[in-house]
Image (cartoon, rainbow, N blue to C red; front, side, top):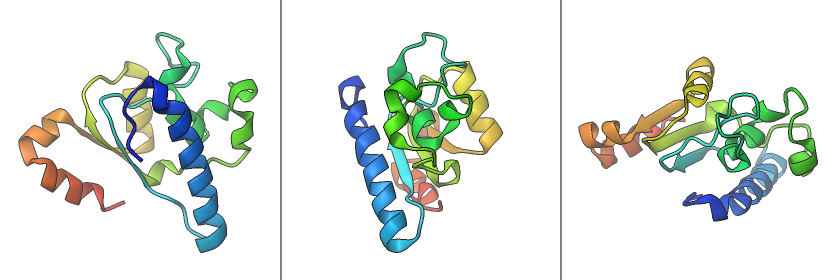
Length: 133
């Protein structure tokens, strides 16, 4: 799944949710996601500085945004169980991450590679490190 801009987020959420459920049902495993984008998009309604929903798709997929019942009217179709485990999520190419998102990534131990990491190690090495999820 490649996430490119705000217009594709509904597609990303639906595709990840549907594929994740299918893999869980058919293979009994959790799906891994490598999110390649400048933004982490893991803000919750409580952490978002702007309040814009387009900065929250990963929070809804992982269940972080539903912990307090937020967004049920918009994303209730995702169901009670998270579609994506934070342990199976890796970010590549981050360069503009909000303070609240940084805290979430740190607290949950989410693997994240910034543009600085890509410049330092090269994209090939970063991809190798990302596959270890």
